[in-house]
Length: 464
Image (cartoon, rainbow, N blue to C red; front, side, top):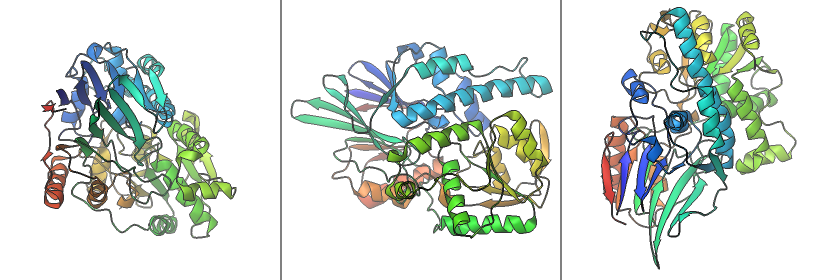
């Protein structure tokens, strides 16, 4: 027998942490931060559901902070084992975790300086020293390689789309000619990714842990070039600045890729484009040298000699001084900055400054979790709390949901249709309750599968 315990991403979109107990080993699949609602964020400060020193190994599906951002905390609390991931995930984690630690430290420093935290003093969840130790434990593997963690247990990483290096984790338990498979989808990408490959098809799955972020939604009919063209040109007409909160890994590069194409085709003017996120800048460099991990159409652009993620008038703002100088920009211009949900980072300062002006535009190009500033702004509220103050929202607000890196429910069902048989049990995670419940119903209606939506901290025996 084996056992799986859902230590995160159960009943919520963030905090992916799945503990698999197998053959005497405690294996943690993903180790992410809870984000969004305060009740979720507070879970980051609670004791982990298993003592970190007792965890043997960690397997990462991809580098996003809601899948990796708790790693420095468990390292701080005694985890010392290997953290296996793809090569691209390792490279991205090296910048994401250090950036996350820096944000933790800066937010604590700012809270202490301004006195808006009830904690005296405010402390970071983890430090850059914790992040550095975590990075030293990362062990890269190639897509498709077999990693034997025991004579009868093989782990394999398969492409998932979603972001660079993202993977589906395939755990196979062998007993002579018989075998059983546990599959962790991670975050599934879309069928026709602009830059990345489509998710790999899975077979012979006995237990499936499946994301459900968009379990109750379909992406709109998506013309990314046409929609971004409209938003940019309308922003130019208003004469203001276009703010794009974008995840540093994946979304920023996709937006730059399309902006470059629109410029080349003469569909938008050649505007100043500021990429104001040190992490996004480093991630873009990783994308540039990991061209083999991208899809064929993107590689064709490279073969034709195009600088894939470079617009004609682009400024990569690494230093704080360069970021502050953007304040002098009156527009028309474009600022791409992190974080994508406006939870932290430089975008928060830009929002504080630019939201008041109706000439400016805010364009959301990704999912906004409940409880985040991004969701507050997108929901049409009159103001949003930033650094302890309510900032009035007068800027024009836009959203293009089709940029999401998550498969919608039809794309998930289409992926499941490729399974050659029904899993014994499918667990739906990484979704808000309504989304998970909706997807569970759709899977049951379409395939008749046994589907469970686990609760936080719930455990299940797996018959292997």
